[in-house]
Image (tube, rainbow, N blue to C red; front, side, top):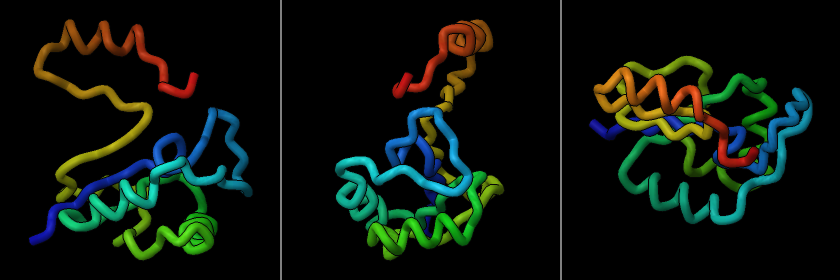
Length: 110
């Protein structure tokens, strides 16, 4: 069984900067083709987004990224091996450390 990799669209694959527009997806981030091509060798890549699925499909096709993508979803797949997100904190088993990480958190694009 191929492992599933869940990747957030906004802020990871594109140049999202916190200004959400439901009708426009920002341009792809530099290096995204090489990044997805490499990941697709070992994983089924699922795009995790709150955006409209048709708009996301269109964006992927227009930017020639659709060939790397297995699915688009707004639901966390229970078989996901890894999640890549610009607004995530990795839990390391230490609640105190995690609380500190939460208090000091900002996405890289801020």
